[in-house]
Amino acid sequence: MSERIKLSASEWKIMTLLWENEPMTIMEITAALKEETGWGKHTVITLLKRMENKNAVSYVRKGNAKNYSTLYKREDVGVEETESFLKRVYRGSIGLMVNSLIQQKALSNEEISELYDILKKAEEENNK
Image (tube, rainbow, N blue to C red; front, side, top):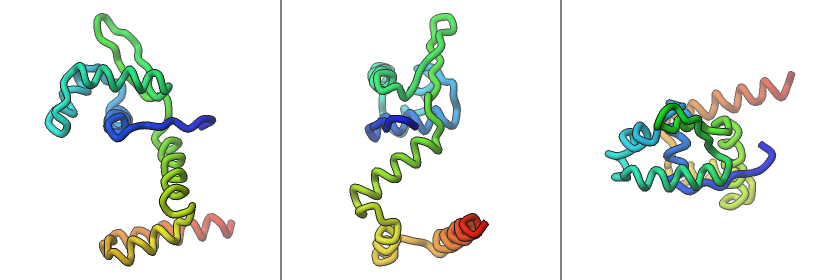
């Protein structure tokens, strides 16, 4: 990603939905998020316009409907957002973040096992 896009929490909800189901119309997005958010069509339209201005989404018109898709891969935006979060909150240190989670007892045994697997894979990749 050449430039970092900054998305609000509401915009993240739409991006996540689109990554899982794109392309989607305004009505499909509204219906999918209605129960969780209570948003109506006009709120979704406003958010999509903001996201278009940030070059996060685009649409293709089919008849009267606009079919929205993302302009970034989830992985690219996720890496950028993770790096930004780590810099802001933990001075860029993954170790500080994990230590904080451990101190707060915020990790389940399943998550700890998953971390071990991830670290083992990273170590194998680094030793190639």
